[in-house]
Amino acid sequence: SQTIHQWPATLVQPVGSPLSLECTVEGTSNPNLYWYRQAAGRGLQLLFYSVGIGQISSEVPQNLSASRPQDRQFILSSKKLLLSDSGFYLCAWSLDTGGGQPQHFGDGTRLSIL
Amino acid sequence: AQSVTQPDIHITVSEGASLELRCNYSYGATPYLFWYVQSPGQGLQLLLKYFSGDTLVQGIKGFEAEFKRSQSSFNLRKPSVHWSDAAEYFCATGTASKLTFGTGTRLQVTL
Image (cartoon, chains in turn purple, blue):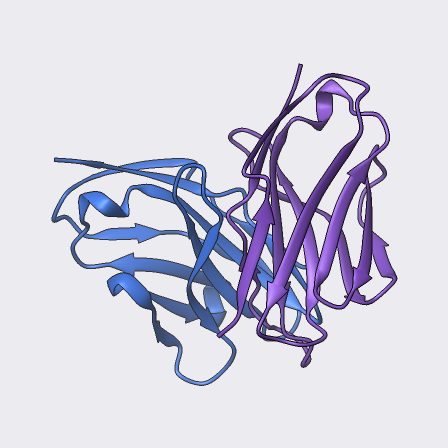
């Protein structure tokens, strides 16, 4: 069966520091991968998605970037964090077999910027 | 563009009572529809999905949802709520490889 791992679970970082959040998927090949941010009391905002190695689509302009160095690895990064980057970050995957596939989520990373 | 509206931000029900969470979608063709549940500090778990066919869909944890094209709705129901159902519920619609989520409904269960 497929599993998704996200780490770290919790992260506290100072303003201006770099960021690297990692997500890996096991048990499937060539998944679609997604990064979402969930601000307190709000819905999910899609940040990036990827349909293959090195293929990244950005949904909103922001201080973050994403990379997919391997088929089942998705990394969310920042060179200099802002206070507004605080939130709950979720990674998700779906099968790359056409439209309407459900997405499956990791347990998330709670990021606090001081 | 596709969109999803969850008109209820917060709902409180008594344990054992029935539950209905509302979801309205906007999409030209037959949409793919999903309901997810999120416990505090956790990721989202898929409850059920609708692609086509029978408009009444059964999911996990005793939940069901009914697709009504005439009302552009996909409401989530449960006949008898348990205290452990307290969580946030998200409706989503999707095409191709992307989903659009509603803003969620927080369910509180009183004993």
